[in-house]
Length: 303
Image (cartoon, rainbow, N blue to C red; front, side):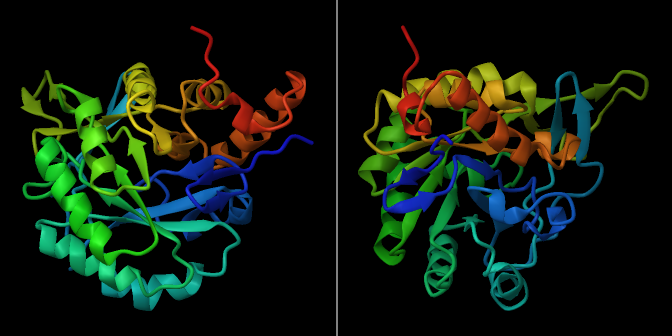
């Protein structure tokens, strides 16, 4: 059997398949469909310092080959996660990673400090790329200087693995990637959603209450793949690929482009078992190509 294990710095994953924040709840929601212990990791929904109600409806809209969302990071806050959710999920035999977001650097720091005390949370994903909130989110991740500053601030207080999630809504993704690497990130995940819009031609009104929202799904895959490839050539830390991954071939493409692991997002809404199907698919691919370890594929694209 092929070896599916990968590492993000010192953190070991049994396979490179991770669920993307905001598409998998806290993991429990999918426990009736898959054995969560099979997954390489679960990144739980975005967690803020305090309760967030999110944006008003409508906040989801289907598009060609994808979807728009403007949920707005709705969650009950980090203390609710620690007291109510963490006890239920901490014993799963997979890496539980918390995606964190804030409206200020101080909020990010407070969340990171609280999560630093949880033994079974080995990493956080610093979300500086969400396009669906008025303050914080993407505005932190579109300027290299600010991206470096916030990464440095979290690095000072968070002692475990720090992953920084980047926005594609920038002119030069490599400049942002290099900035967060210099700020102390252990890994980079990309991409978050692309800012988009949809209008109902009959009512002549936007389909989302916020007018614009984040585009995800197969339609963004070529953009995500290109950005992963560019960033891998720029930084010396691991890159986790996200964006439109819907099957095994998609996952293999991202790994060939240099991703050490991948995240499955929108595809979870279509097929709740897609994660384990892709895990088995990667193993089958390695066996068919007589490759002993998935790490041999990382960055192996022939150019």
